[in-house]
Length: 277
Ligand code: DGL
Image (cartoon, rainbow, N blue to C red; front, side):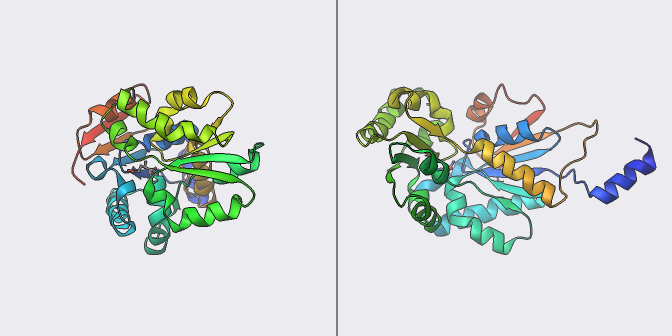
């Protein structure tokens, strides 16, 4: 493209090559990050894994807001143009606060109760999420809105996030917890299980084995990526489609080994840093 034509397009379309920021209490939000970079291959990203403070799900709403503010300010200081709160617990407790205090678009993730309730044939769905999410006002509001004629079995996944953060995905402890949490749901004849925590998609094979193929597992990674694309388009914030180096930077404030392993096969153009934030 000629230089002036390029300038013209840049001015008219107001393209923006600043990175997309994402944060989570740890490595779980990479389940969202993976979908985002797949759908938006021209975008640079910065991901924060606040593993030092995981799990968020056991903290008070005030603490979750304070940690979300810390992560948001770090991403804004790094020049992010939009922030994806890649954590159900942080979204359900802090997104209203973030939206009213920072002048940047936020994308949140909430347990996908609505599609599960609409698709359910047995009239019973399961929801596996953190205590912080299940006890939040936003979760209560969404659940009340969409599950009036539905039996919903809520289960706190206490203990799962620390095991995932420790890289113990295939450990007997994790298998035992999952079985204890999920098996009883089958007595209610659930046909959908909503994964209400971004760490849980990494457990899908084990979950499917416990629940059987007749139960459909719903996670929201792809939906969040689509929503991010729509919001970028609406705000003229998409990056330029031009040959240039795309960079993904991931920061973790504890050891990076588990993060490296869990995304080893995703994106070759990424750098992982152990850093305080
Ligand atoms: N990935 C976070 C979520 O979606 C985990 C919460 C936690 O740290 O307890 O809820």
